[in-house]
Image 1 (cartoon, helix red, strand yellow):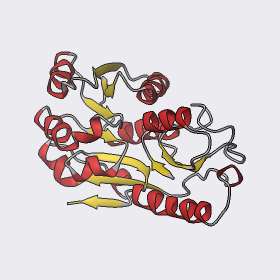
Image 2: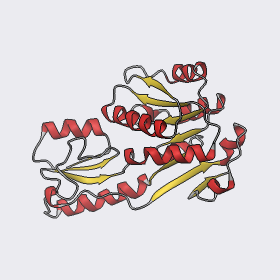
Image 3: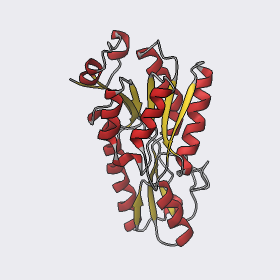
Image 4: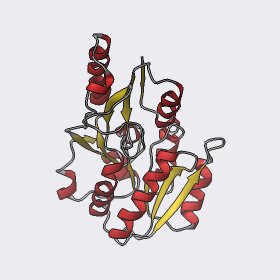
Length: 236
């Protein structure tokens, strides 16, 4: 059996085998990306959970706009070699357009992710807020991304709480630990004889809004009380 949260690895595994069970914990919509036939009836040898990471893109921008009403240009940091990150960028484009926020693309490449260069481009473009799209590549640099955001005084919205724990400003997402613990349920069921095709893909029922007040202080930002009171976790 294979358990994975990496969309590229899951696609490769799907191409490699139609029999070995695959349990997913996926950020992207597994139906839209062709991983499973449907959530209720996944079909084949794949099932698991979707984190609804992409579906929360608009909500993240709304929260960011509420926390920093003065946003005049939003930078989006993403891995241009990742298919799922490309989908995410388009969704942030649509959400930013709806909120009438100009958007700047900060692209990095998997082979040589120049994160520092991306922040230099954000400074030249006069971006005053940042969204980081999770990917296998950028997930290796949460501390560097957080430090550069603070250095450039960029309030950041992230797709996972680990970025906030590393020093990012805020995140809105499902709880990763809960999701992977729940993946063990699927592993147990399959090892006991249930076919993956007979286990519906599950969606999270709880989301976490995390704010790092220490980071807010470092960049000279005061989080409005009506936003702060909605946080599930506050890092001081």
